[in-house]
Amino acid sequence: MTTRDAGAGAPPGEAAPAYGTAPEDRRTPYEIRLRPLEARDLRRVERLEQQLFGRGAWSYAMLAEELGGLGRWYVAAEPVRPYAAGPQEVVGYAGLWFDGEVVQVMTIGVDPELQQRGVGRTLLEALLARARVLRAEAVLLEVAVDNAPALRLYEGYGFVRLGVRRKYYWPEGTDAYTMRLELAPPEGVASPGAADRAARAVPVAGGPPAGRRPGTAGAPGPVGA
Image 1 (cartoon, rainbow, N blue to C red):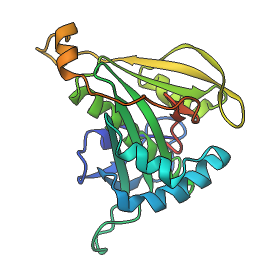
Image 2 (cartoon, rainbow, N blue to C red):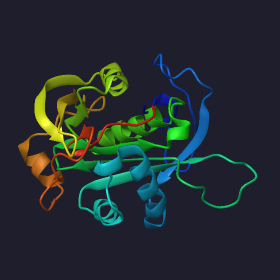
Image 3 (cartoon, one colour):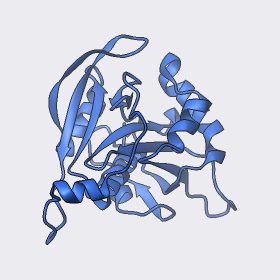
């Protein structure tokens, strides 16, 4: 269902084999590179949304709003094809929202044909790496209570369950676990105080919409680790 170390450590544009270590990641790893998600990718992402989330899929307009939203950061996974020129069709995508103190995972999605091949794990690790660059105190997310692969993945990275949000995902009415990962500051860097947090705060209009899908602060949980 989602991503890993070989991908998170590779910056956008640098190839990262999508290796996975969880039991569900035993298929041949799929080699990808990460790059920023761009407006030209949104039609492809819209199609993936419909495949992955059905009635809960984000529309093109919602995706465009997310991509341009304050405090948002989105990344795309594309296949590494040595003999193909130019950008390749997106096979996975993920995004976060930073409010100046904590990061909230907004969404992670992977092409159904490439799930269980480490793509999702790479995307998750990219989000965690970005959260550390932002010096976020923690990472928050929501995940459907019946999404066992995602729960195993998140708990493998140290996320802990905080509570349950009843009927969080529409239109299914599925409950969600709220999960949190505390981030230690980089070595030699003190934890930010209130003044520092205020200086780094990113103004966000409204914040994330509630109940969007299995994943996080109103977004889907990782699909296709």
